[in-house]
Amino acid sequence: MRGKWMAGLGLVLAVGCGAGAAGCGAGKAPVVPAVVEAPVKVARCVLKFRDTRLGNAARARLSRDLATYARGRPGRIVYAAHDLVTGVRLGLGEHEHDMITASGAKVDILAALLSRRDSRLDAGERDLAARMIRESDNSAADALWSRVGGGGAMSDFYARIGLTETTPGPSQYWGGTNTSPADRLRLLKVLIRGGKGGLTPADRGMVLGLMERVQPDQAWGVSAAARPGDRVALKNGWTPRPFIHNTWAVTSYGRIAGPGRDLLLSVQTDQQPGEGTGIQTIEGIARMIGTRLHHLTPTTTRPCPTNPIP
Image (cartoon, rainbow, N blue to C red; front, side):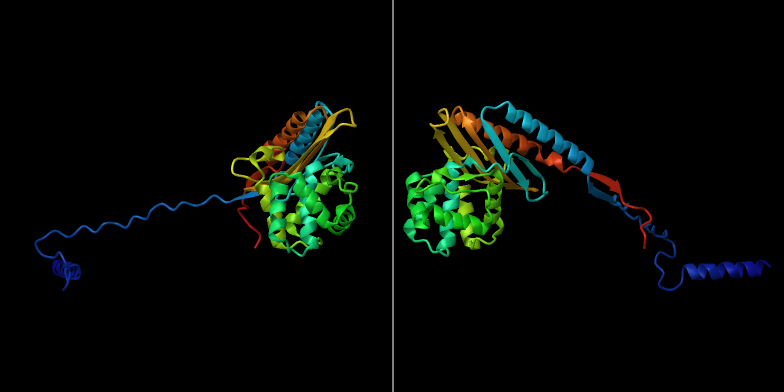
């Protein structure tokens, strides 16, 4: 029995120290480190949803606050806003179409001229266009209004692009063009997306590019809705109204674009006691919309289903 046990021990030793096995003999057997796997981080799965209930409540509060603000300011105040990213719309009197746009009509003049000329403007006309939009030069607007064909040609242009709430000024008085905030947004959409107006992408880029580079002293207005780093393309208008109690009409419309936002905004005022008052009112409305717009599309998160349906 003892012999069989020893034979078995010899077999075990033979297996443990066979030919080619390292560390057999007098030295100690090497210590083989155990394989340790790094802990695996498992990402938490969540789903994000738009919270319609909270968004509607925030929109109701903002609309109420805007209306309260407008009631507390002098004169007539109307506005329209549409964020192309989220689809959010806001407005107060946005279809009132007897609001004088003054120099705001200069964008209309350039767009109509480009449409009429199939983009072929000579160097002199391009210089006039730049002065008209960037500097709000009235003499340049007079010249291009005449080359467009005056009010009759402008009426045809408005009909083609769907501006049903805009009427050109009489005779040579382009500054007497009446419009609505809703039509100002329609014009901006034509410049951004194109449409039936016959404007090429290059035409639209030219107009918006000039609107992005207005002189610093004319960059007031709806630009108050911009966050740091947002791009702003705008055109403002202002004119005294000597036959309406010596008041002013002051307007501003444009595009404010940045991460998660492509906001079109038009604010028009009339019967203002002064140009400065109109500017303050426009910027107050624009700032309120710009700072609170993201509250209108809040989101909530939920964990992913643990047992998804196959």
